[in-house]
Image 1 (tube, one colour):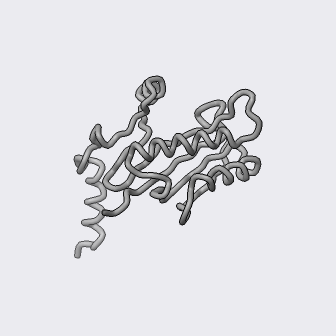
Image 2: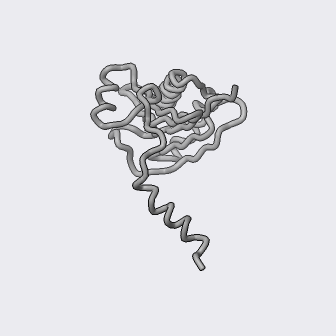
Image 3: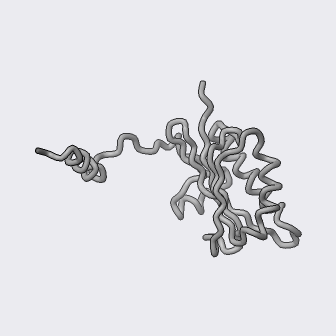
Length: 155
């Protein structure tokens, strides 16, 4: 008697070798408008966002304080404005964000300022949110990275 799991196991083994059902189309990849930012992302190999069906996956956006700034809020404000711009180019907004993941180099010292800025941009029912403390980010001056997933509204 053949195990009921044998067919499932065979199908799972075949998955890595199967052709993808749908490849990313250029129209579904959102790249930066700024030529310098676009050149960097093309060199490293990532997009501002990718649209897959009704779901929009944004790459992380980093916050880095600028010389002369006091406090963290200006850096966080730039992140939320940048994310809003990418969301708008994908045809959605902050109300459509369903998941947010944030990576903090000093979570206890950053969270209050971060929440203050987040609450100015994210209204209504909140998205799911996971805040993670980390040692460092790819960008040496970055202190926080914010990644979001949004869904296009039905209808």
